[in-house]
Length: 404
Image 1 (cartoon, helix red, strand yellow):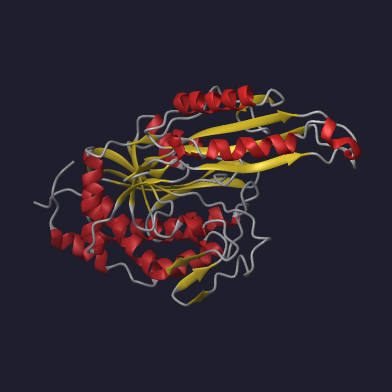
Image 2 (cartoon, helix red, strand yellow):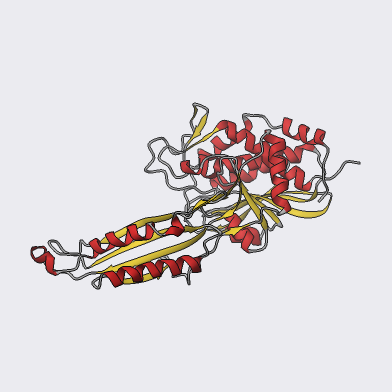
């Protein structure tokens, strides 16, 4: 890639981005329902048409009935890398929200509604960046691609289809909410399911039975207390453990429960491979069983509704010294005036898939992940403007050619 490009050109590109443009587009996207698995074609058509109206070659990738990924592309004048600006267009349902999920209200410096933070705000910023590059006349080495897929929030994720098709790329920027930090990868996962087996009896003789729920009350705090979940990393923080779902008893009334099942959602930093956490968890469970002969367990890796995994999924991340990290840091600083903090993304996203496929990728976006899926989801308007300019700056730094 050519380095550097004239700062006057970048200034012109950034100046062309109206501060209200990203929030207005994000508002329009929020007002179009696109609940995961049932997205409909309305939002996909709106996005593709918006790109086309702004001089960007665009189209739909049909991936099911009434479901389509969206793509746009700006081809350069010379060969070079293919850079993908990515974000999913689906959202969680909005039926439990305390605000109108699809109202798209703007007040108190925030855009409110389902998908505002996860992640229609980010997708809007990427689209604005595409427009800024397309209309700037800047010549590119390579291709700038926008790709937005359906199903990421649990409704049949179609990102693989996107990057096997119109979103095929060499470098990827995932726009998930990072609070404008630069995240260098995603945690891995260890979906642990423990089945405690008790012995049922009438409540009147409960002291003769084995209460599986009570046994699980010993297991949960013991796993939470493991040292691997206490240590902290300056980039990734702690390895989170979450007793996410519990089910036990209630087969019949007035009876000691003879089973209790807990699904743990455990996320893994790069310093905790799945094989290591598996060894530590099983060792702790064996210790508990030695201390309590009545503690009978079954251990499974995977979620109850899906096929079991062998042992889990390791974290996926790009090295700190990879040139992409430095380039993106510099581009964000050039656009926003501040150098972002480097961290690791707490959840999973498309960057993990790209990295596992050998595509260099990082995560950067406006919004705080704590707001994603919340009952009053919102995103700060000032972050939308900063992110739109940052995405344009990233594309400019990675692809723009020198003017002779």
